[in-house]
Length: 296
Image (cartoon, rainbow, N blue to C red; front, side, top):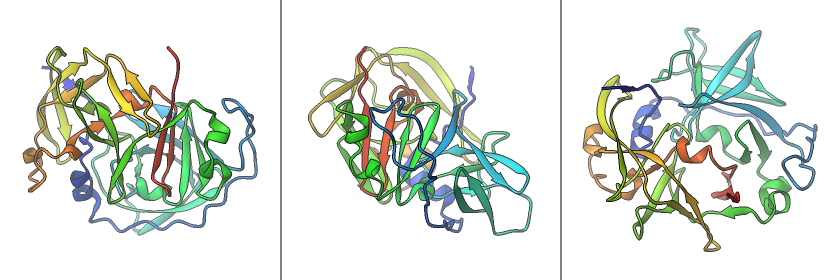
């Protein structure tokens, strides 16, 4: 049986809290966008000041590159399924100062289950009071009061579709339909390699996968390919379809020893297999998530 070699922490809200709640919340200095303004591509008009971060998609995770502390360079896992950011290190410092673009940030030292070679994790707290636009290769990072955050459609055009969302704590869930006529909400999780979705009757079975979860235990999960479109639903009523989505089933919150949450809709996850296919807008201050519709 093949092993699913990925950082699949399953993307459950309560699980993320259980993983990182013991770590102190990192502090961050005031966000000061760089005064360097990028070219207009892929935007219809010139961007306001921002910080640009290079994103490396390894196939199983997203790495944010360009963090520096002293003479050292760091790459951090981008994980919106985690509330808390941290770096792994043997030094005795409680926190460390990092530079990224024009920003100086403080990130706490901690321990977690990370893929080999990754030195830390950037969670939701890192982006508090900001908005971002991710176009696969780069992440554009803006202060919450930037015109880009307030009126993203002025920069991204009519192809920007703001999704129907709901919120639980700091986490955001988007409205989806899959299979046909079944609507629910799924957690947006850049730390999950694959999505966790309900199974349709005609879905193609791709085999069993061994999935590592935090604590170094292994779950056996079924791997499927969707035989009908998965749909994300925008506030305007627009429906964005995703074809041939690969996803996992067979998860039970009982496997995580969590009480009271079994079979709730917050168990569904939209992971990288879906997220990497569309440019993503996320306004963390106003709880708005949008995608760029792309014609086939």
